[in-house]
Image (cartoon, rainbow, N blue to C red; front, side):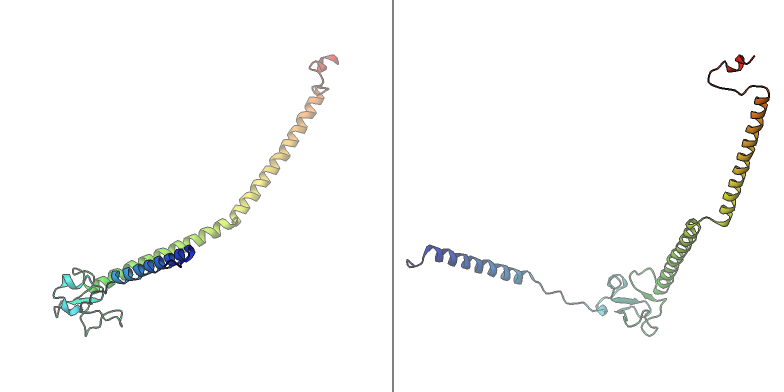
Length: 182
């Protein structure tokens, strides 16, 4: 060992420590991995309360047994169990009532979405530009405003004529200008 230089000793030590670290990592991961427990078949469950919590199982009250849910069909066929006697998810709600409830809720949600979309579209259409009635109202308002301005100008002209007639309009440079002409 005396023929090893300090650089080779440091390199050997670092390689050895890296190997130990890698060994610990891989061995540690291997020991932590566990195999999943064996899957219990649905037929092993003997009552509704133990059967229905598993999504893959269906309890039938006519035969009082737990069977695998037939995933090939959306609804279990009558050969497996009648819908009124089948339980899935909870024991107190039969499959028929579950389907009706979900259909009503789904229909209500879809109808609500459709109504909201229609209302939003109608409101956006209304707000996008002025209606004919609004345009007519704005046009009429402008006409009334113009006539009012014309009457105001005529009235002002009449008042100015009357002031000239009686000598009330003159130079307004100083406040006593109307008394100088007398």
